[in-house]
Image (cartoon, rainbow, N blue to C red; front, top):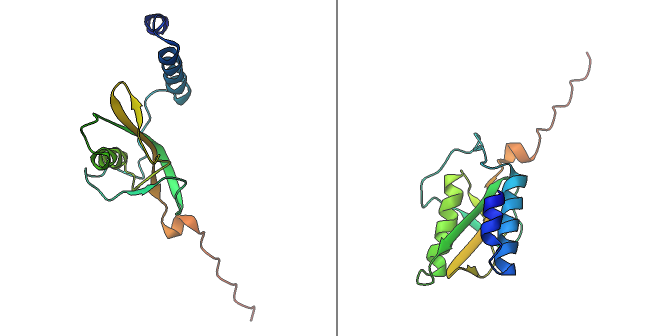
Length: 135
């Protein structure tokens, strides 16, 4: 860790801040995420709904997703890559996606949160049957 930080020491303040943020995120998140067994990976190109804000449907959050594309790749194709990352995690929703990508190191970066819609049974608990009147 010290070696990684010292290699950034000669870089500008923006690069140091980015490296520190990445280090904090990786450390706070505990490294690799264990896949959610409720939502197995889906095939590339699967149907994924995109939301710029919070989803309008009930979801289970799965985890962060990101795509990185060169400027010659269209925004639509790069967003599709973002959706494919959600497919890999078993998601059918990506939310928190900005209107425009972030530019970093000459690449367009798209970020979002992968999620999976909750089934109606998971959203609303079953209504208990009324007890029969005593006879």
